[in-house]
Image (cartoon, rainbow, N blue to C red; front, side):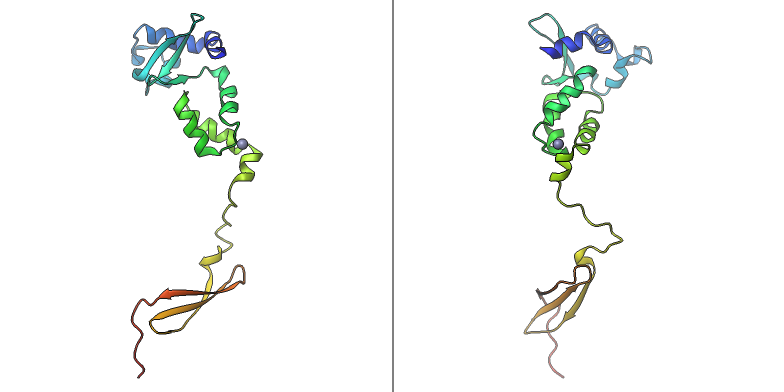
Amino acid sequence: MWLYLDAQEDDDYQKLQGSHLGGASVRNLPPDHPAHCYKGVWDQLSTRQGSNGHFLLILDGARIVVPRRARKRILDFLHRRHAGIVKTQQAARQLYYWPSMSAAVSDAVEKCELCVAALPSKPLPSVLAPTMQAVGLDLFHAGGREPATTLSWWTGIPGTRSCKASHPPQPPQ
Ligand SMILES: [Zn+2]
């Protein structure tokens, strides 16, 4: 219910709703009208009235257009599981809409220490050669297969890779 109240107290939201209910076309509205931020989705909006008599805008019949003052709370709600940027954005897109919502979600998640700590280790900067980009190779033939002795220049860890010969072994001369 607080979303309805937030919408009620948000001047821009009220302007949006009034213009939408009145069937206004965005291009006929003054340049500083908040509807210009919604022109890409204007025809997909509808209005839902709550039991308290207040209204919310709905996108595509399902997503609540979130009033500005409620966005922080919605972000906190979406982010409560610390699921990372992609999953949080997916959840947001199912339920809510506001201009630049995806950017706001990534911003919130990027600033979260828990989410950052849960990320897989970031790749090393390219100037410090990643493990398998700098490998010493010593190939030798063994019956059609080419076991390769590898030595990573980055980790110094030796290894053996068995790989298919790219060409048949040459008969002895
Ligand atoms: Zn987080």
